Image 1 (spheres, helix red, strand yellow):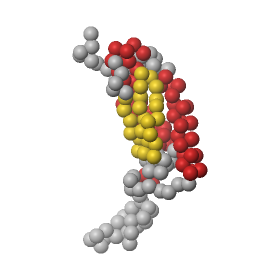
Image 2: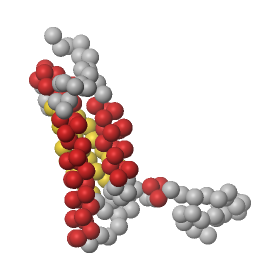
Image 3: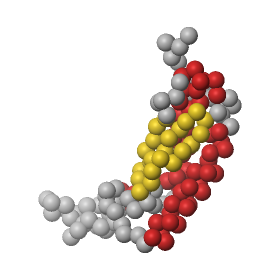
Image 4: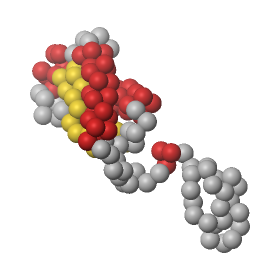
Length: 143
């Protein structure tokens, strides 16, 4: 018997697995589904709309949120934090607890959110942009 979502099956030793239920997000992340151009457009539009809704919160602290890429068939989204986020100690939390959580909660097709901060920004310039909930990173080389 195959391992289907919500199925009770047998493992290789022949014993019955106790009500194994696989969450939809546990499906093979690398598996791509075929979408029509209209469906791809709808997903991309929903994604950009949601990111545009999040941007003012990040901008209020002197940063910005940019969509780098999105594979709407596999559900992999890549974003980047810019501006004061480059020198902010809680930018990783913003990505994980904020951006990733919201994208996965509101767009059921999003399987993975990858991101980082713009490392090309000058530390002093980035720190000067910070305001609101901005928390500067400790930089021992910064004078």
